Image (cartoon, rainbow, N blue to C red; front, side, top):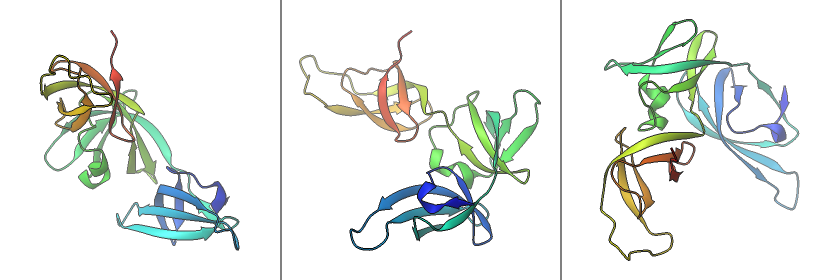
Length: 187
């Protein structure tokens, strides 16, 4: 059991008999009365997203989820196929489980699969990943407005905003939590 005030984004709970992922957490102290925690929960079986408000001292059951390294191999049209690089065991993952990460999944890249009762229930990405810019506008010399950005298409098809100096062929680092440009990759 865990107190609601200790819940963090990314942990798994048994919520009303269904394993759920904490997608977002917000602490709220109204000034009058007890502090509360606002949670956004995603059911791992149903896929439903619900919002709940709990007092910080309420107890909730935390469940143990096993995280295993897995390399993304390919999409077969129905499932994303991952492989454990040590045991060569393959996992077929439903597209709904990786829908939030479209454009951030690359062939050959290693991720962490979350397994609950030997069933894949989630995917954890590295905090930062390297992508290649395959399409973007050319920068105009002298166009150096601070913080100005332009759209860029990455090798996975994802389109993000990048600074004006980024050009086609550049390797860039992207924050996978926000989907935002971090920096150019230095070789």
